[in-house]
Length: 73
Image (cartoon, rainbow, N blue to C red):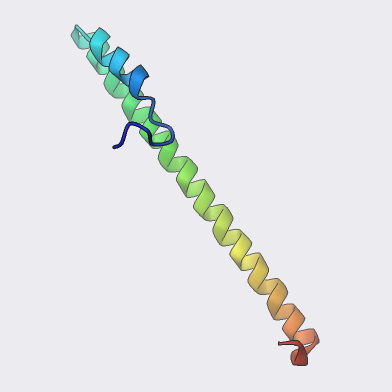
């Protein structure tokens, strides 16, 4: 993953890694990485769902418009 990617806080993760000197802190870092990755995936899924709903709505509107005025194509 590139350090300039959206949602990837390179400096924060680097600091957490530097502080992970014992088992508990290493596990906490792993947990943070997993939770943030899951949150990013959920946000991507929501965006995809919104795009699909928008496309579906546009298709319905265009379909109705074509049914009302078939010469308007």
